[in-house]
Amino acid sequence: MEESTCKEETYQSLFYQLVEGLRQYLFYHCSDSEQAEDLAQEAFIRLWENCRKVAPAKAKAFLYRVGYNLFLDQIKHRKVVLNFQRRQFSGPGPENPEFAYLSKEFEAKLWAAIQSMPEKSREVFLMNRIEGFTYREIAERLDIGVKAVEKRMSIALEVMRGVVDSGQ
Image (tube, helix red, strand yellow):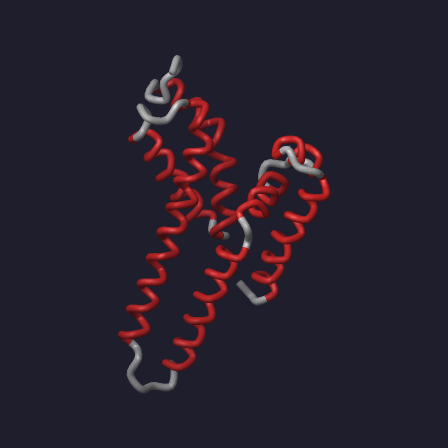
């Protein structure tokens, strides 16, 4: 490893090159700009903490994976909080059935959106919508046909339409 991610100039350069794309990627997942900003910052902190293990050429993949895992951790935490709240407010009362129903519905839709989009479809969607690659460029980079890119994008858009149509 010739260049080190631990060098301040290298780290700073990586930050300026990657932070906006990372924020957009995370915003796509969480639909909250403040949360996306927080996740991106935390991912860069983790990069700094692991700078000896991550070569500059691998920094982008590291940041995106860490950011996505941090997002999933937040989702899991929300699930724990919702379960706790459900137990706290499980006594009789006029709002409890609605709260329980809405909480369950939100949780189900959120997990369905995250889990139902295949990784390959998510990858194509992000490359096109976030990174701005054309279908042909995506096909070349992934070494697949344009029709395969179109199919993966179609699947990703179906998942997203389902989330939007359902009010999430």
